[in-house]
Image 1 (tube, rainbow, N blue to C red):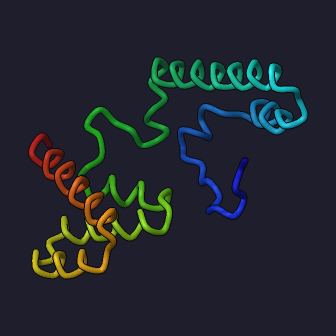
Image 2 (cartoon, one colour):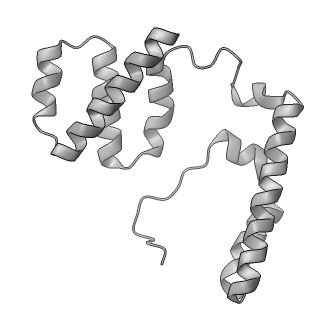
Length: 138
């Protein structure tokens, strides 16, 4: 069941470019259909979105999203872009990573990590490794 108490989803530029009001209308109608119809209509909506996505990249319209072949200018820029889409814990972890990448001293970051749960610390360590790898390839 859908939990409406969670933070509402935020749409990205890609969502706006690959969707339209007709697809949203079809999605809104889904709860009023029987299960076999829901499966068919859900798959049809996703196929239409996929077709629009492929067309978008084939037509070189990706510049409208600010996507270029060179990618984000830095890992910090990418983290800043994805941060608003995370839940509060993810936003906090991303904020710590941004601080780390911007040069906050390692002891300060380690001290901040002490306030995180073991799961959050593990996620942060994984994200740090990912960001280091991205910096080395960039």
